[in-house]
Length: 114
Length: 110
Image 1 (cartoon, rainbow over the protein chains, first blue to last red):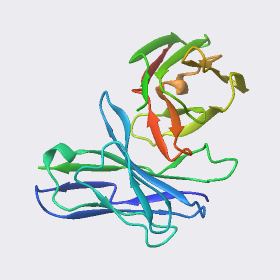
Image 2 (cartoon, rainbow over the protein chains, first blue to last red):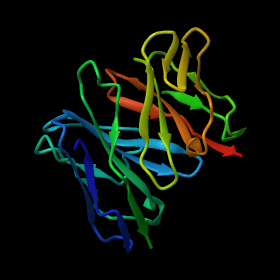
Image 3 (cartoon, helix red, strand yellow):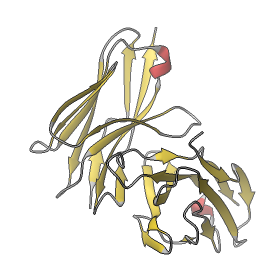
């Protein structure tokens, strides 16, 4: 089954404690990205990656880091989380070919920073 | 940058037709997509307009007019399960950067 898997699904952490949200896709997609979703603001892109070792900033990259060492994995790193990073996070992937307009999302990770 | 505006909420009756609008201000993009998201779930792809005009997929249709900066999603024969949030989205820069609209929460009532 084609899917994007992210973990953890739910996390409560404290300010300043580094955390990583993992993301893995099994569709051999070159493109992966991270979004955060907040009420009234829709989905906002944090970072994206066009291929291994190729990453770039989206619209809201401050406070986040990413890495793409393998094609299937694209972890999101919060080095020093703050309460304003409390949000619902989605990892996503898509093909870069003709059907590349379809974005596949993971199930989401609810993150609370206290 | 891109800016896509949608009405925040729409209410419609089961069995009826509803139109959800998306207006945008952008200098160029590769096409416009629509996504559905149920409460607590992930967004799922509904449709894509790479060219101006109407695209039909079963009960769902989507329309794009680049010259007018306007798109809409049309849902026919509404069902209770269509109650969800709907987002328009555009890709730019080789579809690398993707911008989503603010989302429209559709409530279908009996």
